[in-house]
Image (cartoon, rainbow, N blue to C red; front, top):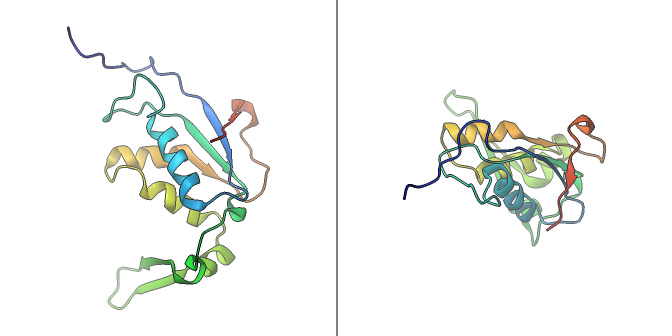
Length: 142
C-alpha cells in the first residue's frame, strides 16, 4: 500500500473570511496559518500547497493582551550599518494597521519557498470591505 499524495488540480481551494474584531492577534494569525497550510484538510501534505486563501477583515480592531501594545517590538533593517529601526506595536498600528497582522501570519508559516508562496494567499484589510466578493468567500468562525 502506498501513501496518497495529491496531484496538481486535485486540491480544491476555497476562500475564507476571518473577522478579527475583538479577537486576540496571535489566535487569529494561528487560525489563518492553519487554513493557509491546509492542515484542516484530510489530504494535507507538508511539502505541498494544499491550503486555502484567507481574507482577514477588521485587522485594526484585533487586540493584544497585557502590556504588549508598548512592549512588543517590530524590527526592520535598511541594510546599512546602524540601519536598524524598531517600532512598538502601538506605533506600527498607527502607521500601518494591517502590517502587524500580516507579519504575525507570515511568522507562523514555514520559513522557506513554500512559506513565501503561502504568504501571498493572505489578504488583510482594515475595515469590513474587501474586493474579493467574486471568489464567494465563506465566513470562518473558530
